[in-house]
Image (spheres, rainbow, N blue to C red):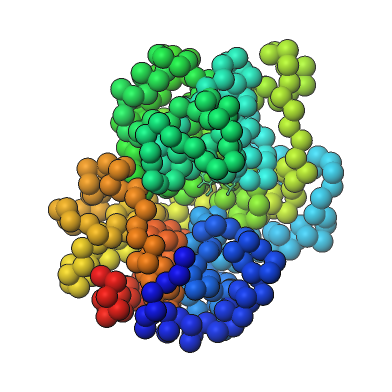
Length: 453
Ligand SMILES: Cc1ncc(COP(=O)(O)O)c(C=O)c1O
């Protein structure tokens, strides 16, 4: 995919020359020169050399206000002193003992204290591993095979859950290159926020489990409300379907105890990652003790699920995780991130109105989404959900040229935004927000001058 020659691209190229060179070098090492799909950007992505608080510094020395915040892992910002100190302390003691260690218990106890459903916990190395594990436990315990998920909900990239995670959504065809029809036939993907569809799937297919992002697909791009969660909880109990909240993003972000604490809805199992490990790799499955018993030796099910994993409960991640969870436990830091996001949403909408662009910013908690090409009614209310919350309108692939021009222009103006979405951290200051709004203003001017909007 190439981008239209524009003054935006010329300015981007002029500002990030060293990144261009590194990208050229990376192209002969990595497919498309990147190590994560989302980091791919035409004509090249920026390369970052260090980061602190709310900002990262590119190899050219340009500071960017960061709304990726470690793909959501860094709610405390980059280099939080408690996390850095904990990792440094642990580093010299040992990074891998191939043995049980006290810190993993301390880490798990913190999760138990904060997350209502966490009777028992098993650590993994990533969120993808956690959702994979939760499904297998659900199947082992129920003896059923099918899995219900919601269209547009992302649970990592493993075979069973990556279908139906990305737009465009073609009814009856969730195929994903490389995923076999056999695997696909075990997946039931239904529209979000539709309890009737849930009940029909439960009645007709008798699934083992139902998994969802409790604040909505792609961290609230298509928001989900507490009422739906309560209805889903009831249906799962009624039909003996195991309810799994994938709180890889929402865990410790929405509230110290995640979405389940915020909404007062207790799932049977929860998957965690990102903030859990304080910015280092790590994930977990937690939930009812009788379910997690599936991985116990000599368990009540008479068959044990195998679960090795070289980096499970890794000491460095445990150290970072304990420090991060301690810093988040009273809800003050998470609350600051939420307040910052609310301010950004409100001020972006004022800016869009002032600049007469048909965009809208929305979202909940510390998550922000921008819907470009929006022609519906606007609202000054922070809980306004555009397009009546319809996933077909909210979760759509935007034109590639606009997307690339938007991202490159915004980066050139000093803000790194996660596609059309962003997350805030406790480290985002009022000054960051002022600068962000200015950067968006200049970006809109540049997009207009280059004919993208
Ligand atoms: C809700 C959700 N679940 C699972 C995952 C996968 O986690 P990981 O990238 O750690 O494998 C992600 C990653 O962004 C996620 O957002």
